[in-house]
Length: 146
Ligand code: SF4
Image (cartoon, rainbow, N blue to C red; front, side, top):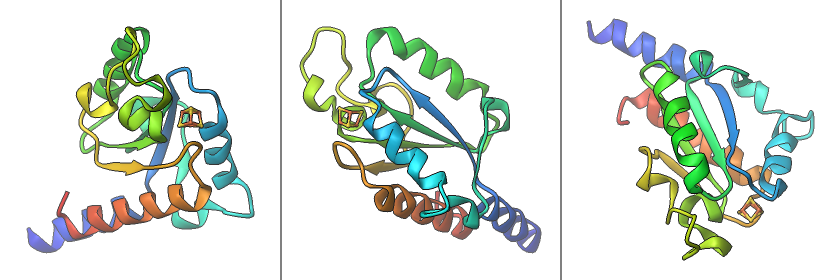
């Protein structure tokens, strides 16, 4: 049992499929994530693939402030993802509201809506920081401590 679950965790860590959800961000963080897909940063060398459906994704990357309008959609997408699933909050406005903090229509952070497993700081984030967050997350998935 231990060997099988270790093998399953290893397989999961070697093929993290990613879904990107933009709540209505200024697009700078999305552009930095897109840079991760280019040959310069090449996130696919870690086995990561960008998917278009939550049903095929293991990791949800969320950018932009969590607005009242986006909240229900984030929850619906999160619920459509198969278990086990992981969430990365990308950018200051996703993590804490950032420049939108205190607005009447903005939540103070993604973790007030769904569970979050990693945070990437920056406004906008750096591609290196996104890669670092993903690599730490998959290491933790492989170790089984998440
Ligand atoms: S964190 Fe900054 S750069 Fe990223 S989406 Fe929010 S406002 Fe834009």
